[in-house]
Image 1 (tube, rainbow, N blue to C red):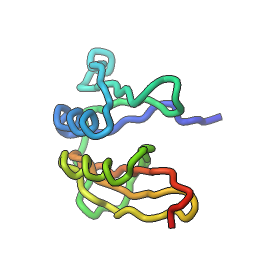
Image 2 (image 1 turned 60 degrees about the vertical axis):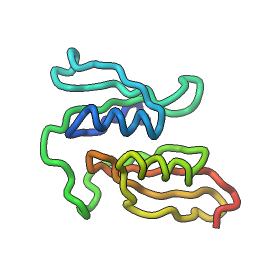
Image 3 (image 1 turned 45 degrees about the horizontal axis):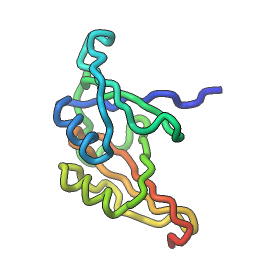
Image 4 (image 1 turned 90 degrees about the vertical axis):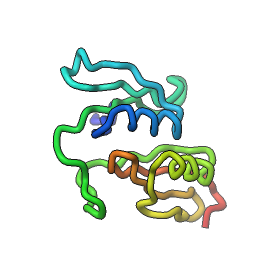
Amino acid sequence: MGRLIHFEVHVSEMERAMKFYGEVFGWSFQDWSEYAGMPYFGAVTGDEKEPGINGALMQRQGNAPEPGQAMNGFSCTLGVADYDATEAKILEHGGKVAMPKYALPGMAWQGYYIDTEGNVFGIHQPDENAK
């Protein structure tokens, strides 16, 4: 089975990206650069007892995505407890709206954002009353 077990976010400025994901989502980082042979920081995204995966921030090896460019790769969606509070933190820390909040009727609130490195990611708050 091909279950997702790790992710990598390609970044242009490592410190800026670590600050963004640390401040907005509470991630912590471990320097694995020695093993990777480039700037590479393991990202601990939550408690091991809860569903989810850890990943890494890695030094971008090419050009950053152009604004308005179509998605080219995977988009990760992060589960959040409070959509509006998370959106406020994203914007406060330099993120931008890619696709505003919308309802997945009877299931959740969803939306997409652009991080400080030009990458698109989603946030998702379960809510059976969403409409």
